[in-house]
Amino acid sequence: MTAPLLRFTEFTDDWEETTLENLAEVERGKFSVRPRNDPRYFGGEMPFVQTGDVAGSDMYLKGYSQTLNADGIKVSKVFPADTILITIAANIGDTTITRYAVACPDSVVAIQSKKDKANTIFLKNLIDLQKEFLDSQATQNAQKNINLQVLKPLELFAPSIEEQTKIASFLSTVDEKISQLTQKYQLLSQYKQGMMQKLFSQQIRFKADDGSEFGEWEQVRLGNLVDLISGFAFKSDFFSEDGNKLITPKNFTTTGKANFTDTNTKWTTEISDKKYICRPNDLLVLLTDLTQSCELLGKPILLSQDDGNVLLNQRIVKIIPNRKLEKPFLLYLLLTDDFHELIVSTASGTTVKHSSNKVLQSFNFYLPCLEEQTKIANFLSAIDQKIEVVAQQIEQAKTWKKGLLQQMFV
Image 1 (cartoon, rainbow, N blue to C red):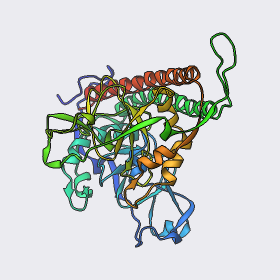
Image 2: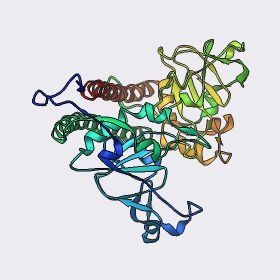
Image 3: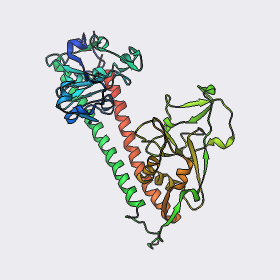
Image 4: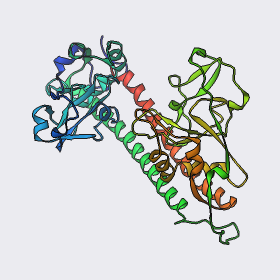
């Protein structure tokens, strides 16, 4: 019998083997103009959904980075609401569902369910289970990609449209819970940013434990309060699957915490000076950003116990504050928009953006006394803890859903 391990009791029929093209219309997007960035075709009201827009969405499309005008629509292809979009280049197999009509380039494929054969939400989840397989079918040219000859004959198992609809309704409830948690995470993050702005601009002030007012903040220059240690240019010849862990730009985030995974962590067997060893509670700042957005340029991270010891790589600097400056306070200060704007506005380079120790040292700001620094850092840390709890809830919900999918689908 071809049926999932977990299903609703009212359904007993076998699931039938079929293909994607039997369940849906599968069409590639289009934009038949070169160069692709010709401004004559952009700036209208039609959403023009890129690969990154699909990758950055969940069940439903969150937004779009470009729009087309009437001329742009003529050289592209428009798909209606309730269409599944799937990426077929670079990041292969990312999917989302549209709530409104959109146009797409040829790096995105549109999948429109045949209403008598497939429920759109069910079909999206079914396709999501094929992500690893689709990635394995990619050809490597300038970048990885697949084509319609891979997607259309994709072999799938599907039940009756009635059972699909029941499964889709259940999974929508799960997705709604994940969406609510995600919204809570975003609201807490926005609240934190707003409070940082008010605290560091002195719109909000703390009082001492005895209720008295703290003194005036002192205008200072960062270079007068810290020592900097620049990273070492570790040679790729010594990179290996073990040895000592390196900190690289891929391990930086916008939240002040490092991100080490199996896929983004580098190791080296090269012997280096002990001064390049970084330990938990060390504060590091990234001086190079590999992206055009410069989102990570100048971002700090405070190493945790889970991160362990790491080696300080080139284009990363360790900051050692003196006794007038609390390290947690400095972490949040370096996460402010004011600091990031200074770093980005003075960055050099075209494809890769760079900052320097000199720019770091030139940062001017107002510094409160140590006791008020501690209160500010503790307040923001408490918000961070709430954000982390919600982030863990989101991951737990996604893991639970993944387990359900493995049992509810063939």
